[in-house]
Length: 86
Image 1: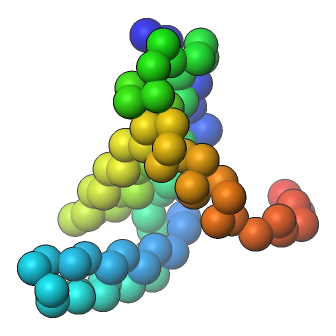
Image 2 (image 1 turned 90 degrees about the vertical axis):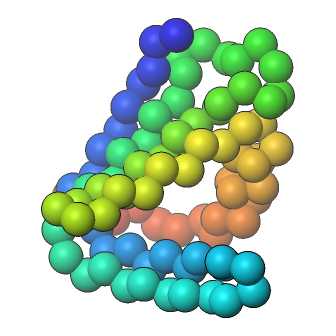
C-alpha cells in the first residue's frame, strides 16, 4: 500500500501516559519531528489503518496508528485554526 507523508520539523510535544491508573505527563520541548502518513487510496475497511502519526527525536519515538473511527474522532476534536505563516 502506497502512503503519502507530510513532515513538520522542530515541534514541541506533551505526552500523557495512563499506566494502570497512574497518569505520567512528559513534555519535550526540543527538536522533535512530526510525521503524518496516510494511504494514498482509501482503505477497504474501517479497522484498517487510516493514518499514522509519528513524533520522534534523539531519545523518543511515539507512533499512533488510527483506524477510521479514531481518525474521525481526532479530526472532530481539532479546532479550526488559521494557517501559520511560512
